[in-house]
Length: 183
Picture 1 (tube, rainbow, N blue to C red):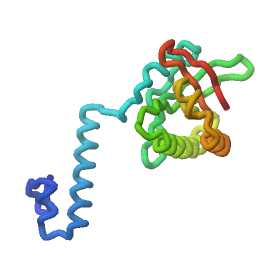
Picture 2 (cartoon, rainbow, N blue to C red):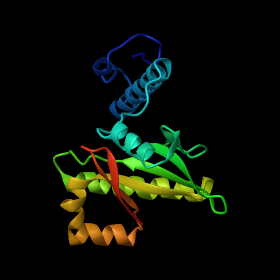
Picture 3 (cartoon, rainbow, N blue to C red):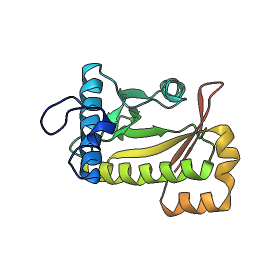
């Protein structure tokens, strides 16, 4: 890391300089963010894929969806968020093309509540972006069957899903198939 004079310092050394501790920590954090951005841009590193990313992608393809984006970028949206997949499917000649975006979740964390709150927040943010930039694209959360049949049957979860109009695609990770679309 560089200090204010351009000398190479460790993050710990930065906090020992004449800068105020809060300012030094903020500066160190900004430098770390910059280095991470340069590193990820240089090596083309993207957001981490969910455990079931490729399984859901394959299941969608088997269900006659064309994957158009992997990931689907919410362009002109600040911050530059990405939804896991974008896909299209021809419905009928008269009706045109159905467009979806799919955020894939494994729910493998120790706390289901924490992970559910996180995915609900992501859904609401992504939905807001899609409503502005591509309102015809429908957002879904992909959930493994085992999680849907257990955790997603709880009353509090059901109420939240209904209140925020969360659409779900249930998949079987073993057979790599889509089992149900819930709107």
